[in-house]
Length: 94
Image (cartoon, rainbow, N blue to C red):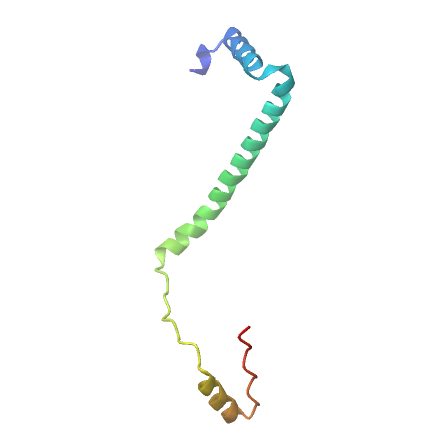
């Protein structure tokens, strides 16, 4: 398909861009396209770099731990009494 493009085709595309954006907005448009391409390339590189790590984690099933209930104030005081340390003051409910 690239062999079908002649210099005339590229000239027509350039004239269409110039007609659509105007010569004043063309530098801003090309700059934004360049930024978008840079972002796209960096995201694709990031996805490519993460791919081996995600494959290794996909082979092992995730470990799910049971949720442990939060210790109550009485349990904290009894554990503090056993260890010989003074209990922590209660948090203010502001």
